[in-house]
Each structure stands twice: as C-alpha cells, then as structure tokens.
Length: 125
Image (tube, rainbow, N blue to C red):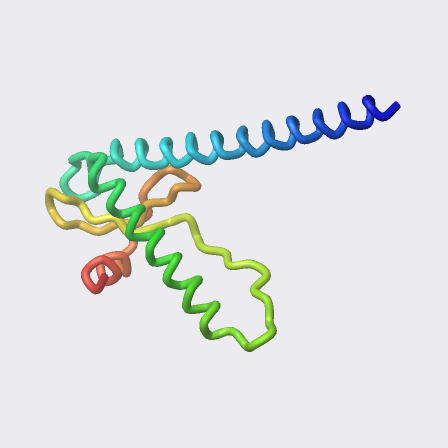
C-alpha cells in the first residue's frame, strides 16, 4: 500500500515536470517562429526583408521596455498592495535597416501593422 502511494507521487512529479518541459519547449518554438516570420517580412516602403538581426534587436528592445515598465509599476505601487496582472500587447516597433521606415510587428498575427507612432518610439528609445 505504501509503495503504491509513493509510486503515485513519483508519477505525478514526472508528469508535472513533463508538462512544464512541454510548455517551455512550446514557448521557445513560438518565439522562434515570431522572429523567423518578422525576419522574412518585407518592409512596406522598400519591399526588402527585415532580416534576423533586425528582428532580434527589435524584440529584445521591446522585452527590455516591458521589463522596465514592470519594475516601474512595482516601484510605484502602494505598500502592501499586490500586482495581479500586467498585460502587454505582443506588438513592438520595428525599423527597416535599409530605408528607416517604421512599422509595428504583431507577433500574435505574425504580420506588420502600419504605425506612425512606432517611429517616435524607436527614435526616442
């Protein structure tokens, strides 16, 4: 009887780690697809592909901005309060390395959204 309980706990632990591992692999694959798609997309202005370097840089900049925003939210919160959820759009500005045209990349839809405000964000960032 005791062995069966230990086996059940062990199998539950293995299933838990397998689930977490599968989730991490899924997130890594989605991130790879987002970057690959953005790298292949063509600039609306000059019709040239953005490339891997531009895709990585624009997403990394967006992730740094999100991290900074979360730190600022945590610093500004009332003592004793709890942050329940911080939700960011999964869209970030991308600047064409060939012509400088700015657009907004939408990872959720894996396309570009024309956004004149993206130019301000990139130039000021």
